[in-house]
Image 1 (cartoon, helix red, strand yellow):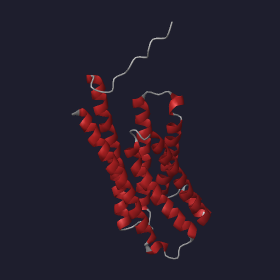
Image 2 (tube, one colour; image 1 turned 180 degrees about the horizontal axis):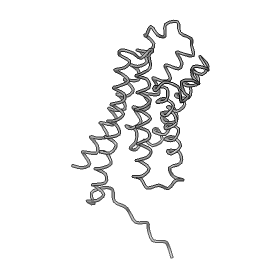
Image 3 (spheres, rainbow, N blue to C red; image 1 turned 90 degrees about the vertical axis):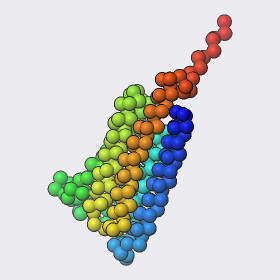
Image 4 (cartoon, helix red, strand yellow; image 1 turned 135 degrees about the vertical axis):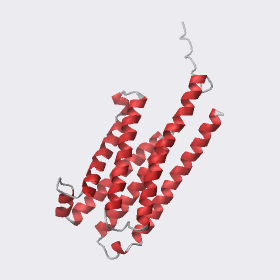
Length: 215
């Protein structure tokens, strides 16, 4: 029963990951067909599309936790790269406006984006340094997952509050991506519980002792 439950949760994870991809494609379509980008500078288009792709990656991340560590790490690095390109394009487009937006006197939505970027950097660094840190699994998951969730919520909140190509249906896509990310975090917790219960009851994967050393 427990093994089947874990397998079902794995199938749900695959569906969640695919849903994040579909939402990402929908966001790209909404952005590319928006009148806000009609005749807009190339750097603004690049900034918008990289932001949409980053949101999709953040929504997919919680669904890649179990058994897909390399993919999870690769997507995390890609998301950070996309966000950096997003910010860099805005700096190229209008350096003064971008710097003001990220200052203490800037609008709330811009400060949300700045905090989200800082948290995202922390999350990636934690993931890369996990083995060196030597933290217990629950401690690492609490910090890594908690910071990642906060970065996602702030980033999506920033996108929703910003006027531009993601209004209307774009807002629906953004909010759906946020819900999917939160659901992915909850599913990751549920996937660990059957495994812990199976190990505690002795029905999980047995630990085989090493063979005796030859004399």
